[in-house]
Amino acid sequence: MEKKEIEEYLTYLAKNQNVSPSTQNQAFYAIVFLYEQVLNISLKDENIKALRAQERKHIPVVLTIDEV
Image (cartoon, rainbow, N blue to C red):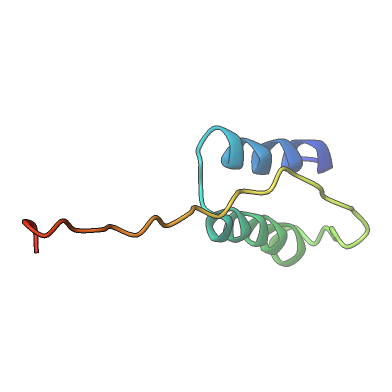
């Protein structure tokens, strides 16, 4: 994969798979590890930009008097 494919994959995770930001970051760092440690290809000069996953909003649950 080249820069374009890496960006497309990370964007796919955020848009189509609705992963959390931490999952997207883990996928990115796994790719970086693979390239730099296994394949000996540096991604330092690449400016990889992908759509970032959005934090999920946690809506508090409010119980009615009957539910309490």
